[in-house]
Every structure is written in structure tokens, then in C-alpha cells.
Image (tube, rainbow, N blue to C red; front, side):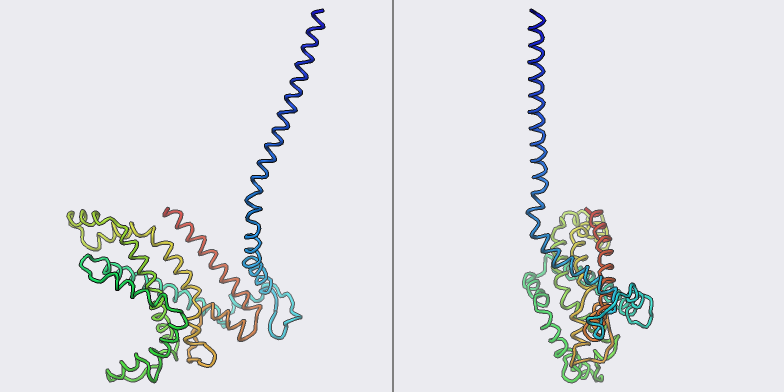
Amino acid sequence: MYQGITACIRSGMQAARCAGVRQDAHFFERGNSMKNRQKLRPWIYSLPALTLVGLIVVFPILYTGYISLTNMNLYHWDHYEVIGLDNFGRALLKVDSGFLKALLTTVLWTVFNMVIQVVLAFFIALGLNVREMKLARVYKTLLMFPWAMPAYVSILLWRVGMFNTEFGFLNKILLSLGLGKMNFLSENVPAFLSCMVLNLWMALPFMIMMMDGALQSVDRSYYESARLDGAGFWKQCRYITFPAIRPILLPSVIMTTFTTFKQFDIVYLLTMQKGSLSGATLQTIITYAHQNAFVSNNYGLSSAVSIVIFGFIIVFSLFTNRGVKEEA
């Protein structure tokens, strides 16, 4: 009798265990499905944006990479062939292709502009932050006009009003000093310097504003303590100002470096615009790619140059992002 009761109890317990296991398995599967849905939900929500990025950004880059491997030009518009890395070899290995010279010009352009911008912006921002400076807000507002002005208007203003050989303001100053007229845009070195002056006039206000904001974030009590300890201007800059403003300024400097490196409109509109060629043969890698695409109609070579430029920008981005993370 007792054995029968025990067997019934055991069978009931086994049935309850099986039912519990099935219920646990059901809840486990349900939990997994919910987790999978939660993982997929951000991707589903991001799908329209990812599709748009793919169509606008990824596809043009991939297509440009494909064209760079072909001989597509005006004479092979429909019947072009894949020629491998010939366009890259022509751009990078042939000295007379013009690319290496344009690359050197671009590097010099970027370095000179950025060094002068940062140095001038620092000292101008220091002057604007002097306590005795009157009408500082008015000066800061006036400084923003060149930066806010449309680029084409600024370039036209400088080309016609400042650099013009006959009635430009700079030549009028030279004549008043008893000197002869100068064609600022006819040769490469004067044209390079003229383009750099115009770029500084357009881009410097932004750097000044960034520098001004960074300097205002530094606690002035540090300077007072440093002066009590006998620290001069340069020691204050080295041990207080520069370390304090570097994390704030670094993103602005990186962004401005990118903008300067891929500068096109100033060089093109001052020296290479159709109908108003100045005589200078100054070229950056951006104007070099433009000339091969829309003047020489060599789309394969222009695409190869564009991919090389894209590679430079990616490498520079990785390098600068690493620097920003280390600063943080």
C-alpha cells in the first residue's frame, strides 16, 4: 500500500518537474526572442538613415574607386576598359604628371596657413581679452563679417578691388610710394601668397573666436598666482595658457586643417577661372583633380587622384582622432 502511494507521489513530482522545465524553457525562449527584438530594433529604426548614407556617401566612393581602375575619358565614354592601377601609377610615380607638385603645394598651403592662423588668432584673442580693452564686443562682431560673407563675394572683392593690376587698392598704394605696378596673380609665388592672404582674411575670424572662447575658460586666478611667483608672459603661456586651451582648441584646429587642405574656391577663382586666367599655374591636388575631370576629361585619372585624396584624409582622421582621445 505504502509502495503504491510512494510511486504515485514520485510520478506526480516528476510530472511537476517536467511541467516546470517546460515552463522555464518557454520563458527562456520568450526572453531570448525579446532580447533579439531589442537588438534588432535600433537597426530597424536606423535603416532609413543607413540607406541614405549608403546612397549619398558609400556608393559614390565605391563608384569613384571603380572608375579609377578604368580608362574612362572623353574618347572612351561608353566603351572604357579596366586598366588596373595604371592611373594611380601615373599620378604617384610620374614626376611630370603634375600630381606630386600639386601635392607639395597643398602641403605647404596647409602648413603655412594653419601656423599663421593659430599664431595670429592667439595674439589677437589675447588682445581682445585684456581687461582694459574698450569696445571688445564691437571688435569681435566686426571680426565675424569676413567669415560670414559668402566665399564668392569675398574672392571677387579681393580679385577686383585689391589685386587688380590697373585699379586695385594694393597697386594704388605701390604707386603712391613711387613703386611700379605689380601683377599679384601672374606668377606662382605671388599668386600663392595672394591666395594665402585671402584665405587668412576669410578663415582667421573663426579661429579668433574659438581662441577667444578658450582663453575665457581659463581661471584668471592662475595668472595672478603665477605673477606672484615671478612668472613672466611666456612662462604663463607655457605652463598655464597652452595646457588649458589645448583640449578646447584641438577639434577646431583639426576641422580648420581639413578645410584648408581641401581648399578649392580661392585658388580656382583667383587664378584658374575660365575667361579670366591670371597666368599663374598654381595648383593644389583639388584643382588638379578638377582640371583632369572637367578640362582634360580624363575621369579615370581624376578618380584615382580623388581616391588618393580620400586616403590621405582617412589617415589624417585616424591620426587626429587618436590624438583627441589621448587629450581626453
